[in-house]
Every structure is written in structure tokens, then in C-alpha cells.
Image (cartoon, rainbow, N blue to C red; front, side, top):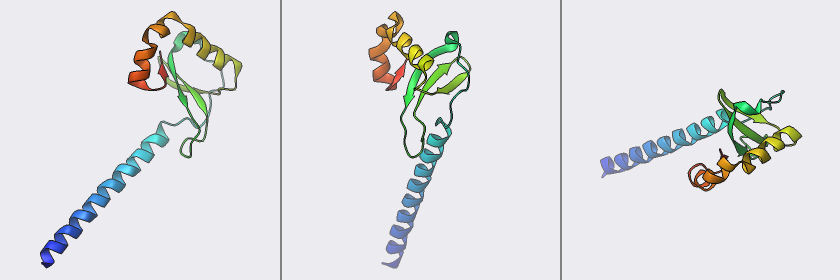
Length: 112
């Protein structure tokens, strides 16, 4: 009887530990990939492959347009005219319209 209680307690503790580790890993990775500041210079449009949106949350307090470039991700301020011009141009492009539905299905708010 006692060994059954010990086994159940141990299994419960292990389960809780695994859940806590998974949650901490989620928080850590969300924080790492979160934009915390904007680029200071205009990004050359030729470098941009697509973009995604970052909403302001507790973990990511900055609202941003994340431009996916040949050299990685760059976070831009959505209140700047050039940023929204780039977004509009990408959304209006013929190539974007061909894959927009697929992008929504596969990538959420990621646009090519």
C-alpha cells in the first residue's frame, strides 16, 4: 500500500517537472525570437523574402513587422511609412497572390 502511494507520488512529481520544463522552454524560446527593438535604417527591398507580424504581448512588448531577409529576420516599426509601403507592395505582388492561401494554411501570418 505504501509503495503504491510512493509510486503515484513519484509519477506525479515527474509529470509536474516535465510540464514545468516544457513551459519554461516555451517561454525561453518565445523570448529569444521576439522583437525587442527596431532596425534603425531602411532595409533594401531586394533583400526581403517575406514578412510576418508580431503583436504586442507580455513576452514580446513591441508591435513589429518582421521582414524575413536573405540574412535573417529584421524587426521594423509598423508606424513608419517605408515599412508599410514594403508590406503593401509585397501583398500586391502577383507572386504573393499565387501563394497567399497556401501561406495562410502553412505559416499563419507569414507572407512571401
